Image 1: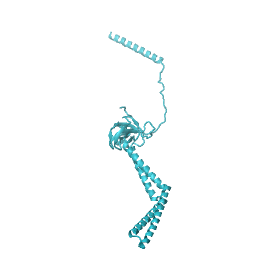
Image 2: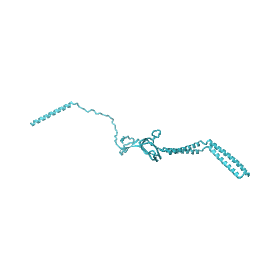
Image 3: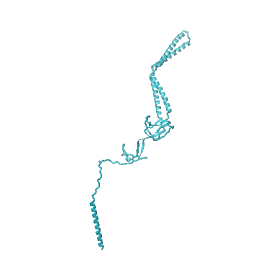
Image 4: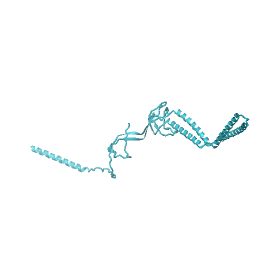
Length: 298
C-alpha cells in the first residue's frame, strides 16, 4: 500500500514538471528576442601630453601699494577732503572733480615770504635792465654840465691864483692871500678831474662785470623764489598714487608737525596674491604661469 502511494506521488510530480517545462518553452518561443540599444560613441583625436598634478595652496591677498602719507612741513590743518573708504587719484588737474588733494595746511606765513621775494626779484630785474640799456641821455647831460662847471671854476681859480702869485712876488699881497688862492686853485683842479672821470664813466656805460654781477643777483633771487613756491606746495598734501583711503588721521584745526602721518592709502589695481609654496614645487613653477585663484567671501 505504501509502495503504491509513493508511486502515485512520483507520477504526479513528473507530470507537473513536464507541464511547467512545456509552459516555459512556449513563453520563450512566443517572446521576441531583445537586444540593448547602441551606445553613443564620441570620436576625438588622441593627444599626448604630460599630466600635471594639482596642488591646493593657501595664500593671502594684499594691496600692491600701501603708503602712510605724512606732512612735509609743520602747520595747521585748514581743510580735509577725504573720508575713510574714499577713492583718491594722483592726478593734478585742478579742473577735475578729484584733484588728488587730501589735506591742506595754512599758508599765510609762506605767502608773505613769497610776496617779499617777488618784490625783491622785480627790483633786481629792473636794475639789471637799466644796466643793459646803458646810461640815459639825461644822465649824460647832467655829467657834461657838471664837467663844464668844474672846468670854469678851475679856470677862474687858476686865473686868480696867477694874479695873487704876481702880487705876492711884488710884495703887495699877504702870505695868507697867496695860500688861500693856491688852495682854491688846487681844489678846483681836483673837482675838474672828478667831473671828467664821472662824465667818461657815464658815457662809456656800465661795465661788463657790473652787468654780470647784477644778472647773478637776479638768478639767485629767482632760485629763492622758486624754493619758496616749492615749500608752499608742501602745504597741499596730495595722493602719491591712485587708490583708496584706509584711514584718515587728522582733522581741521589740528596742528601737525613735520613728518606726522596724515592719511593711509592703498592701491587695489592690481593686487598681489602671496602664496608660500613648498620647496618640492618650486622647480615646477615658471614666471608667467597661469594659475586659478579662488577668493572666499569675508
